[in-house]
Image: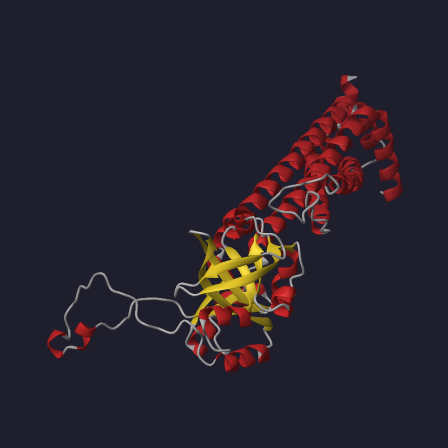
Length: 419
């Protein structure tokens, strides 16, 4: 049977029950719209929330961890060899916090094809001094240029230029939470005290605002040279090397390799931030589940409409089969009806989904913790439209297949005799 005849008959049957057909098509379109909008918004939100941490976290962190000595004096005594020794309250060994031969390590890392960039860092515990009150703080000595290039540093700096900590001697970008406690404004001088009791004046040149309140109450940023001066260290003192890879998924394996090569501790981003990845996956699974449920519900609507159409058009089906139409031709007619409804729903739903997502993307979203986020985040990736289209067409096809199979098995003799 020619395809032209199938489409003409399918169109005639669709027009005969136009209202029911439109209801089914609108159901599919609504499901696709909500699927696309929900996934776009949820994944946009996931990227924003994860970015608060993951954008600021190196893929691999090289450092020297503080841990108890693995070999205790009792283990060296000949009379206790071969015995199990139980020791409590072991104190950490006296180790160097700085990375030994750091320049050589940086050169080898930069020569690695898997590495996108390396940023040195110094972590210094300090106190923000307010008269007789000391507030706990952490100063991160960073290379402002590399930090901005690899870890979006400038996106979190407000009230000043991130590069000023390098251009202006003895300057600091103060965490917004700490700045609010000290009532410190850009241009003010604050006093920080090191654990050794030394006090240093630092000029505030900007605020750092990550969106995590507890983090912003403690963390601040200085240049590497200023931080070395605070700690009384030489110019080659570096406590951390932050490595950004070209492929994030390689981090666990590469970290293990670096740990063996450089004899330092190496922490990968998956280990350091497993909870954020878990949260994103759970939110995505919920979004997909809700969207697919909507498509399945729309499929049941198509199934019911086609079933009713078959019961009402038994005479038409009997006449078609009596005039020489095979059962497979009748099945193709009803499958064409179902798929046509699905295609219409996918096209209209995709357009509506894009427009609704764009509308959400223009809704103001103001929060004190995220000053640079002005609207709700939305991810307009094409994959959501493709996934919605595939699921919608698959749902409508199977929703039409069962009624179509029933229509193909109709015996025209029984129908006509009954009339």
